[in-house]
Length: 160
Image (tube, rainbow, N blue to C red; front, side, top):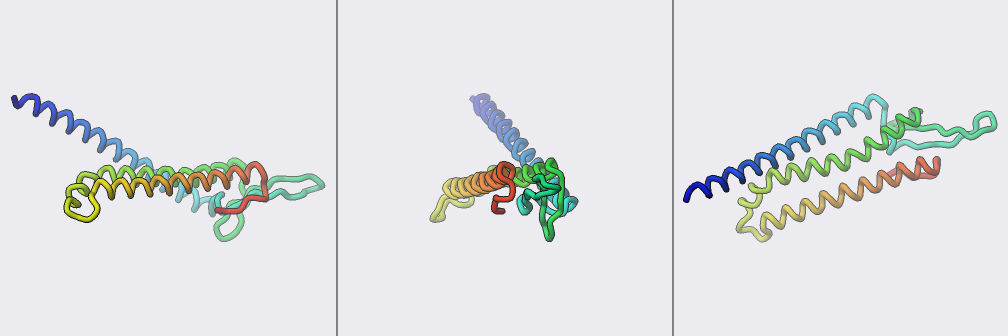
């Protein structure tokens, strides 16, 4: 009779271990992305989301100039500008994933500690996860729109 219970516990602990490993990897990858973004920001002197693409007339022809910005405009190549823009967009995705992974790891603790409160633990977790997801989606969308507007019609996009 104890064998099925032991098998159930074993399967459950393996699933929790797998879930924990996945969450930890998401956290590590997300934090590594944040460190890489920060290092890129510092080495470039800004990011594309604060920068712009300008169309200037040089010798009678139009030339695109790509700028990243922190305190002052820094001219960079088109590839560096696109890299910076994509990396700026990716921060919202990975930080949202990190927060959801941390919430997943803390879920059991939150649920067990909020049994007799006005709002139950599972409800709170659902609310927090929804807010994190919506903010990540909205900010990612906003940054993508800015990036594509700048690329498709230089000099006319307004910074986020």
